[in-house]
Image 1: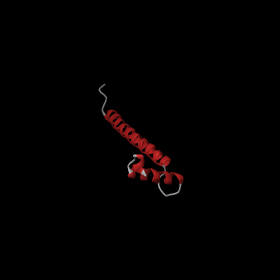
Image 2 (image 1 turned 180 degrees about the horizontal axis):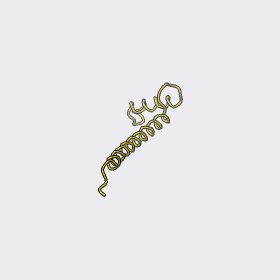
Image 3 (image 1 turned 90 degrees about the vertical axis):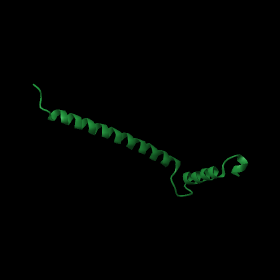
Image 4 (image 1 turned 180 degrees about the vertical axis):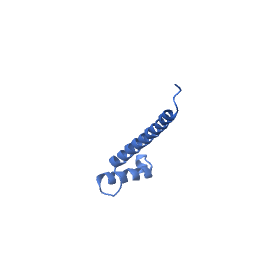
Length: 71
C-alpha cells in the first residue's frame, strides 16, 4: 500500500501504529503525551541551567561577603 502511495512502507507502518496508540487501540505513548513529555524535558533542562547559574552567583556573592572589607 505504501509503495502505491509513494510512501516508505516503514513510515506508513509507524503512522498506523501511532494512530492506534492515539485511539487507545494499542498500548503506547500517545502523540499528546509525547509532546507533553518533550515540553517537560525542555523545561527541566532550562530549570537545571537556571539552577546552575544561581548556584554560581550564590557562590560568587558568598565569597564576596567573606572577604574582609578594605576600609
